[in-house]
Image 1 (tube, helix red, strand yellow):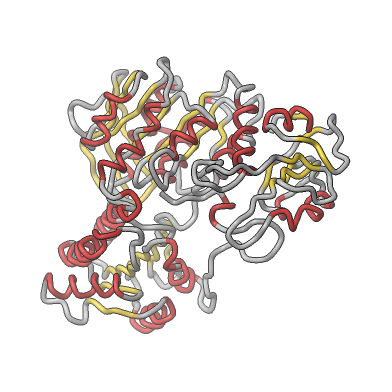
Image 2 (tube, rainbow, N blue to C red):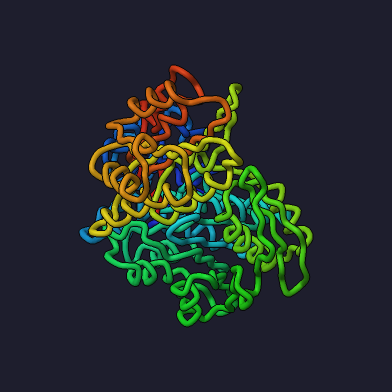
Length: 497
């Protein structure tokens, strides 16, 4: 973070100093919401989460080196106190501390006029594309991007606050739980380049229909300045239509002939990794991706469009794309065990679009080997849940996946029944009640050379299956655990939309 006095920070967030805070004391390190991450010079934001109240850890944070605590009440330590409001402070009522984080992030990033801010949204692929863009444009200057899916009203300002004067690029993922959320995030850190990947069926239960999802995602391009750039997926009609909603210059990416940045001659190698010819207005170049699955071609094209706008040449972009790898955990992580079993851990999250992409990647990776799809429920689909789970079960059969292991309750049963109804499947599809049952089945039946995909919505915790297969005897439990700060998903800054 740019060095900022407590007096300056308090003025920026509309707060007051308390607890003996020195107005001239400098915030020089990270702003954090987890007291375990405090280092000397940090500012600790006492967010009230679902399972913990950050105010309870204020003393520990200062003892460990925090210069002050951003809070709504005095705790006996140096603090910036902000008043709670009656309204929805940060787009969804998460409170005054979260709203203050946003104001502080805006104050700091306004002091970085030479930093290009790139915002990314879409129903699926946001995190993978964010990781790809960050790796590629790092070749053109110092780049900051969030870890994992820090894409909400907590994670986005925390990422922005880590920027320094030397930062040339700030890459921000923007998630939404409803209309207005992305507009709020754009107000916290205004983007100059906005990328919209797709409008899918994820979280239909919350949004209601794809038109409403498109309305929410399009808030990103509406927020762009006249001298900004909207990078839009020409292959998605709902995204393409967003060109009418922005005053910024529009650049289309896709595989169709009308795209400005497009892919031709897309091929998959025996491991399921894509190669293609990258075509741009400045020339062409061959690209060979290290990432698994054809769906990464679209992500790579979006990345190429951003990199070109930031001054990189087509050859440099192609080389950097070929060097980029998977960064965020549990997203198409491919590991081969000593016995030849390949485990594809894509268990971080799932929606119908990403589930289809993962199954197609699994089929491409088969190469004559037996394939397993260990699938759990896709959450927040509302009235579309039955149809979407049914479709995934049927797709597994149509792609000739060797074995389907449906894990969980009603939604998993829908996939299992659909698979059995689609073809002559009997033993090829099995329903198991939980992750341990899935692990037990796989341990008893896997053989050398098998390829196992593990995927479900985050709440199903199917990463336990993948981790158990990779480390016999480990339970693979995810999550932060422990004590000392705010550790629920919201406080971690992840929305997963």
